[in-house]
View 1 (cartoon, rainbow, N blue to C red):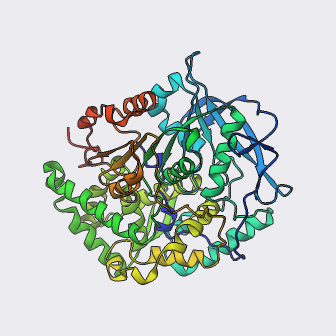
View 2 (view 1 turned 30 degrees about the vertical axis):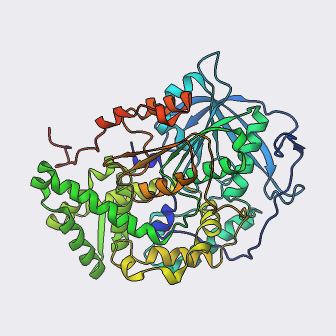
Length: 513
C-alpha cells in the first residue's frame, strides 16, 4: 500500500515543519446549536441534509469512486452560535444490498490534518466486504479536506525543517493567511470534532454507528466512544494512540527502534545481505557524513522530470528514513538507496524518496488543524524534566523534533480540551486493535495500553509491517467479520499467518525472482 495512503500522527513534527501562531490562547466553551436531540443532548440542523451524486477522488487523481455528498453547517466556535459558521463535508458510499444494516461504518483519517475523503480511494478495497451490507460514511473532520481546511502553503524545504529556529517564521506566515481569511484556529480539537461527528450521526438518522480510526483517527474514535458509548456499536483502531499518551519525546526513540528492525531484517535476508551487506553501517556512515558536510544535488523531480536542485542534509536523510519506515513497500527500497548513497555516492534515490514523500505530505495535510491538535492535546503534557535528551540526540531525528514542537506551541493558541480527555478509557463496546510490529510512530505498546480498560477487545500484531494495517493480506475479511459479529473472541484471524512484508529491492528492477 503506498505511503500516501495513511499519514501518521504528528508526522509534521517529525519533519520539524510545524507552523506556529502568535495569538492569544484561551478556552472555548462548548455550546448547543440550533436543534437538540433530547435522547443524546447533541445538536443537529432542523432539516436532514439532502445528498447529491458525487465522486470521491484522491488528490493525485489516480483513483476515484462514485458516492453521494452533502454538507452540514455548524458554528466554527461552538461557544458562539451566532458567529462564523463552517460546512462539514460528508460523503457516503451507499451499501450495495437493499436490505442493508442500519448501522453504517464511519471512517476517520489520521494526521492530524488528513481528510477522510482523500484517504478513502486508496483504502476502499479493504472495505468492499463491509460496503456490501453497510453504508460507509466519510466525514472530513473540521479543519481538514473539504471541511473548512486550515491549510497553509509549504514547500519541500519547509517540510525538511533544517533549522527549528525557523518554525516561528513559518508559523507567523500561516497565522497571517488564516487570520486574513477570518479564521479562528482554536475550535479544531478532538473534543470539538467528536461533537461534530455525533451531529452528523443525528442528522443522517443513525441510531448506532461503527467506527474505523487510523493513527490520529484512533484518538478521535476512542474519544467518541467515551462521549457517546450508547451510539457506538463497534470500533476498529488501526495504529493506536492511547488516550493518556502525549506524543513527542518517544517519537524519535520509536522511529530509531523501527529503523533498526527494518535494517536487521535486510541483514537476515540472504538476497538483501548479498547485495548490500549491512545497511545499518551505511545508515550510520551517511548520518555522520551529512552532519559534517551536506550535499548540493541536482536530480529529476519525481513529479515533473525537470531538473531539481536540493541541499541535502542530515535532516533530509531523517525525513527519508522516517517516512520510508511507514509502509513496507517503501521500506523495501531503503537498503538499496542507502547503499547507492554510501558506496557509490549516488544520492539520487534517497533524494527522490524525500521529494516524493514531502510532496505527498504537502498536498494531504492541513497543517493549521494539525498544530491546534498537537498544541492542545500533546505538547502541554510533555514534562521536559523527564526527557532524556542524550538518548534523543543519539537517534536520527535527534532533539530537533521535540524542540521544534515546543517552539511551535509556545505561541500557537490552545483549543478546548475535555476534562477527562487523557483519562483511561473504560468500555464494554467491542474493539479491534491493529498494530504493525515495526510501526515507527504507533508501536504495539500503544494498543496494549489503550485496551487495559476495554473488556471486549482483541489486539492483532502483524510482523514486519509498519504504520496502518488495513491493507494487509485478508484484513478486509477480518474487519468485515468483526463488524458483522462484533465478538472479538470468535474472530478468526488465522489468515494473517500468510502476511509477509514486501521483499527488498536488490536492484532498480525490483526484488530477486
